[in-house]
Image (cartoon, rainbow, N blue to C red):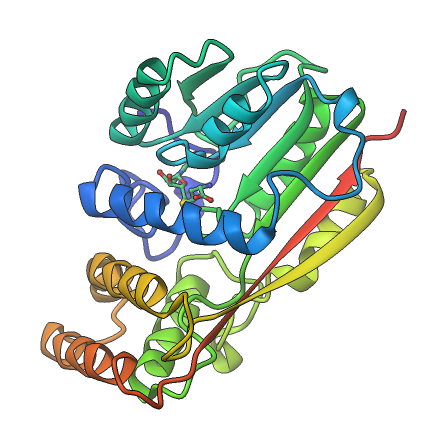
Amino acid sequence: MSKGRWHYQMANIHPSENSYAVDPESAMEMARLMDLDIIVNKQMGGLFPPDIDLGKVHDVLDIACGPGGWAMEVAFEHPDKHVVGIDISRAMLEYATAQANMQDLQNIEFFFMDATASLEFPAASFDLINARFIVGFMWKEAWPELIKECMRILRPGGIIRITDTDRVFSPSNSAALEKFNIFVSKAFVRTGRSFCKEENANHFGLTPMLGALLAAAGCENIRKIPYMLNYSAGKPAHFAQTHNWEMGLALLVPFFRRTSMASQEELEELYQQVLVEMRRDDFRGIWYFMSAYGAKPM
Ligand SMILES: C[S@@+](CC[C@H](N)C(=O)[O-])C[C@H]1O[C@@H](n2cnc3c(N)ncnc32)[C@H](O)[C@@H]1O
């Protein structure tokens, strides 16, 4: 497995470890991402930013494509476009390739590639680059490098869109979920993934940085779109999103242990509390995420 340049700068993570906070080969993570893709695509209301000229988009790259949901939908809906998905999970890439073959999609390819290292594409290869929910493996220092790489492989006028979040389990009125939010926020500081300091880490501090990161790489005409998913009890997204958080939490337990957030017993107790609290009739939870996108100058 190729290793990114920043793996060796981490204080708390052994260099041989993959940078993703959960096991990328896990079947449960793959199932979770397949569900999440459906929820998020629906919430975003379309595959592409609403105000771009799709006629100018031929080659599309999806960074950290997971099981390939977004990329395959683009390939299916736009047979005129050529789509490439990259990821570090062999299991997800195999699944995505098998799905594309089954659907007889001729205009899509999937490659194993580490997004925290140089991207193995020639300059000016793509018209649109999409990266969604990559905070789970990106070191803080990796962001400017990845965006610089994207600018290199974009054609002039090409679009880069990053969609991500600052909190995965918050805000909600579940005390246990809020506690897990603090754990993940602090663990992200300890492993170099956060733009916050540990003393006040109750989010990742990423979305306020996205515009500045794009601008620093020379992007122009930068726009931002916020999204909110209300998955409170009684809302249509309640079942799917609470199920998603449950799977996500179970997968994150080893990461919480490695980053010394709590003992196994404490984590298990808290997990049981989450299951109860998210099923209560008065449960309220909203998940916020944001897209920032801009263009490479002509
Ligand atoms: C939260 S998922 C997002 C999947 C997809 N983009 C989506 O929005 O549904 C993060 C993905 O990053 C992949 N990943 C982890 N580390 C990576 C790396 N260094 N380079 C590329 N992909 C990586 C994981 O395998 C996983 O598929």
